[in-house]
Length: 133
Image 1: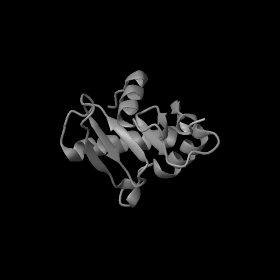
Image 2: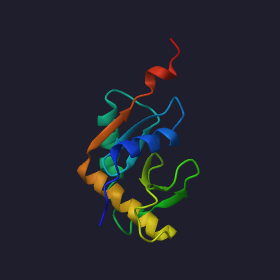
Image 3: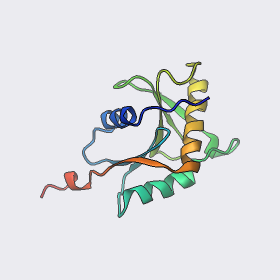
């Protein structure tokens, strides 16, 4: 059973993890973050298109692949997928089993839900702060 992570906690986690002032990103309801390396136009739309393509997991294909990053700046893990700019946060209290495979599968299932539901909860637009006026 998936537990919903508080949106404010997720925003704080990603703000700490993505401290680069040039990185714009979009957060989805279940903790998946899409980093926009070339932000253009409406960021939520751009991120939603990326997540719609690269979010849903398909076992046996590259869309089922994942990696687990043990985070240093915050408690928990970031689960990677088959697109380098799509990451899903898994909190330390979410999976009962803390093995890498269990955390990865849990994160992949959260990414899958975000890739199907596509519900944006936060947009971090850093475009203006990157351009000294």
